[in-house]
Structure formats: C-alpha cells, structure tokens
Image (cartoon, helix red, strand yellow):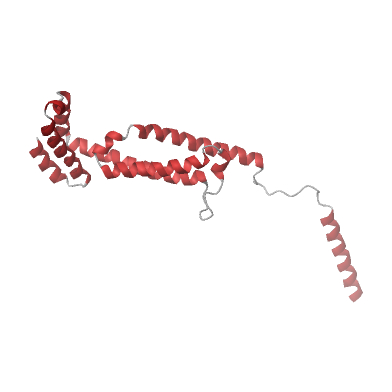
Length: 193
C-alpha cells in the first residue's frame, strides 16, 4: 500500500508539472494595467484639464485689483495662493507627461494633484473676497455712492488734500467690515457722510 501512495504522488506531481508547462508563452498582464500609450493619453487629459483651469483663473484674476479695497490681506492672500499655483503649473506646462508624475518624493500626489490643491486654495480665498465685497457693498452703499460722486466731479484734482483725507476715511470703513465690526462700520459711515 505504501508503494501505491508513492506511485499516486508521482503521477499527480507529473500531471501538475505538465499543466504548468503548457501555459501560454505571452507575458502575463494584470487587468487594468497602463501601457505607455494609455499613460500618454491619460497625461494629456490631465494636462488639458489643468491648462483649462489655469486659463480660467488667469482671466478671473486679471480684474481682481479693485477688490483690494475690501481687504488688503484677503487680496494679498489670494494673489499669493495664485502665485503658488502658477509655480506648480509652470513645472509641467511645457511637458504634459509630467502632469501625472509624482510631485515630490515626500508626497503621493502628482504635479496635477498639487496644482489642483493650490487652485482650491485660490478658489476659497477668492470666494471669501467676493463675499466680503457683497457684504461691504450692502453695508457701505451710501459711502460708495458718495465716493463715486466725488470721483465723477474730479474732486481729487480740485481738492487734493481734502480728497485724500476723505479717501482715507472711506478705505477705513471697508477695514471695519472686513474685521466684522459692522456696528463700528455703520457708525463711522454716519460720521463719514
């Protein structure tokens, strides 16, 4: 009986080895693996999306200067965040394939991921600046109208010194709104008018 077990073991091992030897000669490929062509197409798609976002925000931020009146710090923060996003974008702007390469050895994200993260910060800061503008435009509507009137009659050229002091008081009103001191902003506005 012992011989029978040995014989059966040899036959089973031989069949198993024969089955392994008859597998295809093509290299195995994991389903879903990326070929160089697929990677190139993916990189181009990611790059084009980043380029579209870059161009959109470049246009949006070209006309941001008037928003500085509402909060110098929000304005500067927005431009600083944009500068960081542009720095990352410029790293892969001339090489679409680099968009899907690792940004650094310390992060698991790609250049495009890093750009999108920086752009999200820009979006958030810009949105806060626009919300502040909306709030200030409502609260300080009378003062805004008064300054527009003074500008329309060219008060700055005719009454330089007086205009400067009025302009300083006007800008200070926006600082109160930015600091959420709405009561102070309204009281100072009454004095301003």
